[in-house]
Length: 533
Image 1: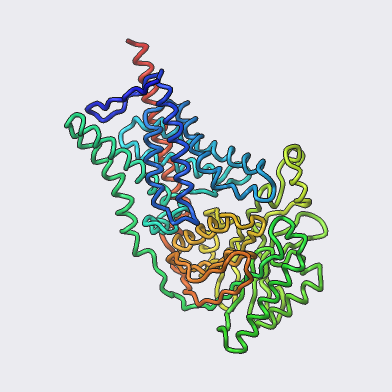
Image 2 (image 1 turned 180 degrees about the vertical axis):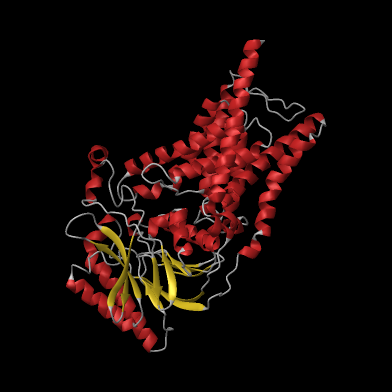
């Protein structure tokens, strides 16, 4: 069996491979999987962000000039290569079934992106249109089904990358667009160089497009550097993040609710003793993680007493993560502002509860495939109000765990006055997987996007304090009780990304739609021309 050698004509266009070339189709399929796997490798905890552009370059080679059906299939393979390893943590305690189902579903969005990229790949300036199509698919994946699942946005793999300042320009859509554009531009530049070597002809327009596609994202990131500012516009605050830890890993940590609560109480009292002895600075406020009290302190006087005792000991406002269980209706994943003198004074109910984790859609149907759904015996309901607490004069924006993945959930807190953001989380269910590092990278991107310090208190690790430039200044180890106390800058100015909100994403989606419409028009016109002849 031999592969057909594909020539390159003077225009730099790759003719379609010979239909009988099975080997070439096999190579393209393998390359599609590899491109997805390279995207996975570009995500934390590996500092390999620079693999993302080559991954898109390889994907460009795989998809350019392909038919729509082939683009869909090759895109699906790339999606599996990317999302299967990225989301393996979702099956940590519930088995492979939910993990495989989630990855298979989410890979469909990459498949549709592959179809769209194949469609626009024959158009002028195709790298720009292809990158916009990728963002269109990400935008859809962040919204449907069940409110969306934006985990794995390309932007979230760039917390250590040179493109990160672009988050302050237009948020995660602009950051992700720049990475994809650079990658597709790399392939186009390579293709044009091969064309020149084969023919000696230099098509100036297409060469300029290739050069701009590579250089513009890098130049844009350098130009955006002045937006990355960690100066203290509104002074500073000393914040403490408590990581109490859990007795053991896994879903059963919920059965050890009192032990988890006692751990956070003990760490807070130890901090109070250290402050009194001069071993630690007095914090202005204290942040506990999500689920630090799975015992409802409104219904359980004993839980309320131990929380109140710990808060009185440290003597400053403390945010408690609690499960609130009203007599009727749904549970609430609630953050409670607990004052040392007045007790609970304000609450924030998580607005984007996690499907299949905090509530079970289509419960009777899902039970057929996995009996673990009944571990969630009572669904959580979603809150409706934006969370901003005034803690000792500092306005702190609240985004609980899963909400950090959603652009709107974090931005809302800043537009409502937050000078600092906290992302209290509970990652104990997912053991020692990469999940906690992936989520931490989201918070680093959010810090730059909105120019705010971000504090991430987690039950079992990794907790962290992040400055507005995305730098982690302190972090804990996994499954280790600890307390972080750091002075962080407070800021109130708004970045372009915060001001514009969804506008950059909408413009990129419109660009993708225009490219797809243009491709469809050309295809219809070509078919009509063929029939006329």
